[in-house]
Every structure is written in structure tokens, then in C-alpha cells.
Image (cartoon, rainbow, N blue to C red; front, side, top):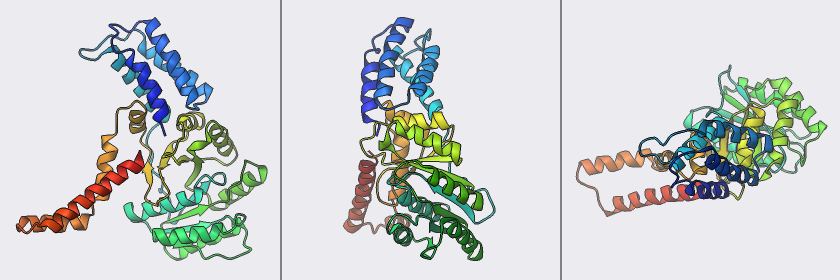
Length: 350
């Protein structure tokens, strides 16, 4: 998602590498190009202005520290300011009496339904939660059936469909089912629209008032660009948003939405969706994203992907065989398959 921005910033910082000092003229020249790069990446203008002012204040007058070149010093300052702009990492909030209601909101086509199933799978596998999915989308053809299919794939519960039932009634029935059947979390997938309208906001607000969600997650397609900022602001003002989820970050999006939405709404980005598969969901880590943008790589994420790719049971079996001296070519082939899964995860992550 951040390739173009990373490339532009890399060019700017490369030219600073041979500077012997960080004078105001050099910093100002570099930051003009950083400003253009951010605007081209669809970062909202007010966010760009604040960001550049913060970087300039810290950069001017900084001395070269030991072996650190001025260019590297600027990268460090920009990196720190990026992290501040992107906010802190924040997991989904489940601190409430079960079943905990999680409300999913957003426009049609943002990937909201698939994201609901992704979060359900994550909660089931990582947090060992019993999760119920419920579709409140009575408008889009087969939307409820789609979530039902995804629930089966994620191996979580799905609220039985009652045709003709209104969204608020569905939400109440979902919560009642959750209480009666011992679910830990109920994820409510609300209907999206092609654009923001008063009917959408009124319906979502009514559902919110009925279930009082612990989390209201706004799902936004990263390809939306600067419109994502207006979308986030509208939902936050009219409904109240506790967190953001960016989808399709593996596509050609320029990345400005991630910087802008967090700064404009003050709400944390909680997850990144990087593909259609149900396990293609990452917790948003600002420091790692800043590292991606500045071309610093992301070894921590790669290691985590490796851990996820390696099957624990298989590892224990192989360890036992090695201890007994019975490790053979079939076992070696199994190891290569695990490495291939790691490589595939890395390639899809981008």
C-alpha cells in the first residue's frame, strides 16, 4: 500500500545523506518534497501541515550523532512523527459482560462482511472466544447468506436468518441468543450503502442504542483515498466510532487514508485487511507501518508470520523424531513445505 510514498521519501532522504549538518535551508528543502509526497499519497492537507510543522521543529538544529548521518537523523525524526500521527496499537476491546457486542459499520463494498468473519476467526483461534455472527443487512441480495457461509468457514456461530425481520430486531435477537447459548462475543454486521445518507446513519444509530456495543468498528477500503477521511468523520460524528479497520491494503492504495483517518478522528486503526482469505488480517502496529513507509523493513511481522505458518503439532512431532535420531527425507520435505508457507505469507503481505 505504501510503495509509492516509500519510494518518494527514499529519494528525498538519499539526497540528504552527504550533508554535514542539518541547517534550516536543507531541512526546509527536504520537507517541501516530503509535503508533496504526502499529498500525492492522499494524506489530507490539514494532517500534512501539522505533520510537516512537527518534523521541522524537531529537525532544525539537530546535530549529527556519532555515526548517524544527517539524512538518517531526518529519517529518525520523520519515523517518530509518523508513529505519533498513526497513534498507538490497540487490540479489540472485549472488556464487558458477555456476550460482548461488536458493531461493524461502513459503506457497501468496503469489505465489511468479510472483515466481520476475519475478526470472528481471530477471536476464536487466538483468544479462544465463542463467537456469534449476525447479519443486519436486509437490503443487499444474499448478504445474510454470505455471512452465514463465512461463519461456517470460520467455524463460528451464525444467527439463523428470519426473512422480513428488521435490523434492530435482528440485533436484539442476536444478543438474546448470545446470552442464552453462552457466546462470548456477538459481531453485528450492519448494512452498508453506496454513499453516506441519513437513513443509513439513523438505522445504525438505532442499532447502537439497542445493543450498546463495546466496539463500533468502521471498515474502510484503503483505495478510497481522501474520501475516507470524510467518511470516517461522518460516522464518528453521527454514530460514534471506537476503532478503524483498513481493508485491501495489499492493493495499489497510496496509503494516505491510514495517516489521515487516525489524525482526523482520534480513533485508533485496529486492523489491516490484506487479502480475501479469512486469516488475512493483521493487528495495526504504527511503528511497523512507519518502518514500511520509510523502507526500514519489518522483520517483526515476518517472524510473527513464520510462527503462525508453523504448525505446533507438527513441530512437536518433528522434535521428538529428531531426539530419537529418526528424522528422514519425508520430514525434511515437511520442513520445506513450512518454509513455502512462510514465503507465501510474506508475498501476500507485500
